[in-house]
Length: 98
Image (cartoon, one colour):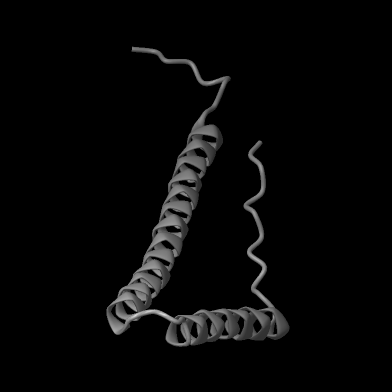
């Protein structure tokens, strides 16, 4: 009748550690690069603020995308449940006699 719900596979601990270490390493590398640039302090400060703004924007975008995906999944589950209920309650041999 309906397609089975997609199974949710949690991330492994190794993948989580790899993602956290990769993020920390990249943020540290860019931070060190900004600190040691041969430019004035104002330029370094601007680049540092821009880097932090980019990181926070990336986190916000990831959260919004995750929330939209979860919302569409929940909506499809509700619609699927309504359809299943209608199909189980429907009796094709029932006669409407008024």
